Picture 1 (cartoon, helix red, strand yellow):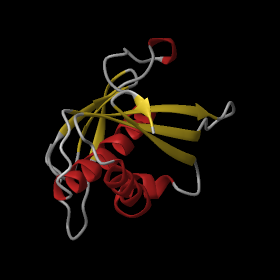
Picture 2 (tube, rainbow, N blue to C red):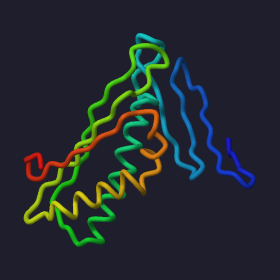
Picture 3 (tube, one colour):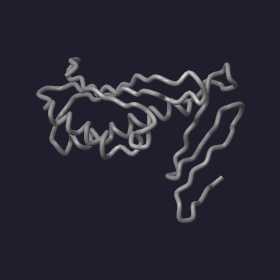
Picture 4 (cartoon, one colour):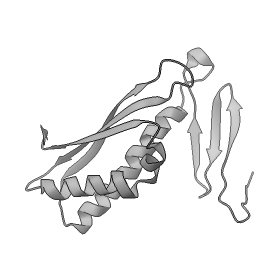
Length: 148
């Protein structure tokens, strides 16, 4: 199936079996979503709520990597880890998301990293911007294994 948007971007999902869905984004990329077996899934793909967390980390990660490159900050590795809390009652939304930006490398300029992360989280990352107001978000930075 090909979905063509007229004037607007569009995407779709299709039920595969049980609670597993395949989807196509407006850019033409496929993705799979699934859930836990105990509720009718097959545990064969990322759950939608997990995908949301990955989207936040991917969005801010791309921002930060791009900004650090422009600032000429070199690193040997860059990861983002998250910890979250969810409401106990349905719809069981995220109530708190805490991101840790972890960089490894020689002579990493902490102030430039702080600036890049702040710019991403306060200005550029559309995914985290959409979450603002509905979930408490925080971040911290680790350089070479040390929280700074």
